[in-house]
Image (cartoon, rainbow over all chains, first blue to last red):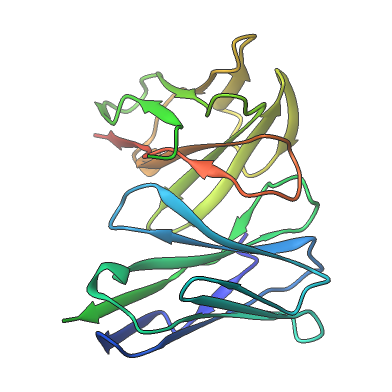
Length: 111
Length: 113
């Protein structure tokens, strides 16, 4: 079953704009991770945020986590055409790295 | 390149057949995971192995089985294949089975006809 649900399902922006994707989940978690997938290829890990963390940065990425609302957001700043991909949040309820993925947000960045 | 190798990349087979998907984890990673990605079910965790032992099970059908060998490579066996088994099958690996990122292979695209 899907634990995380991303919102929006699809997002279309211009290069240079910021992209924000949201994720909601249902049960308590050990950590939450964001992954990127380019058109039917393998998933690439972007960032991991633990349940006791509220915000984390990595380059142009900023992730927030609100465990009281069971939600997370991924912000990509100054987006580029190369950021075009599907973005998934994944929760790790048990801390075994057995991830439960949402259905993803498809991001299209136009030049 | 994640360092996780999956073979074959593509597989086309008929209903009722059996196939084996192979995964070589990143050097040094002891934990291997299998995931299935389909249009209707999305990405689903199937099974996890750690250092040769089954560690966790997800939504894996009884027709499917997996194992991890002493050299840490893993195989996913799918039998009595049905049209609905057509999907992308991913293998991922991590150093330890907990609280850490997983590195995904490029997947095996299985088409059952």
